Image 1 (cartoon, rainbow, N blue to C red):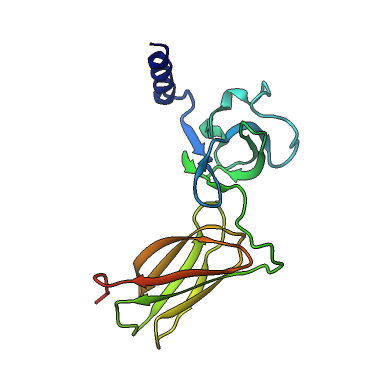
Image 2 (tube, rainbow, N blue to C red; image 1 turned 90 degrees about the vertical axis):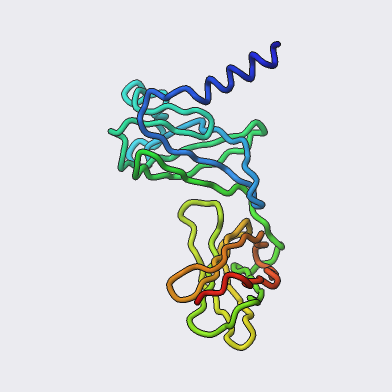
Length: 212
């Protein structure tokens, strides 16, 4: 009975409409793309008096509130940049600067890196596409799956045998590969990229999805 009551209370809390109309979700993921239980514990101005906690300040606390990894805010806070602090139950702390551009946002964060321990600032992703004629304007890009503001990187697909290589300058973690031809994507897949190392994407079978 107690377990059922606890579950109903949790459902009710998640379904409750916040008093503030806007929100930003700030999910945290490990390098393999597994979501971690972090919560927002402090919000500070990105400029000016950066030490004041806006969640506690009497002048601003009616404009901001938090629940888990969600920050709710009034429309008056739009177009502002804030420093947020997140923490988990193990004491890990993450600090990020975020910008509130819209009334419904998501700003993902990657916590931790996949690294070889090497001193190179770059990683390589290699592989090969198969199943389609490699003629015309083929392209491939890689980008971190989680971490707002991260760059994307473009690689080269060989017209001779479909092999590709992408130099990735981010730290190791879960990445998205997008393979396309001309002005449309053909295939999207995911790969865990180890920083400062060689990463084998294998043979990507495009049979059945060849562009006309």
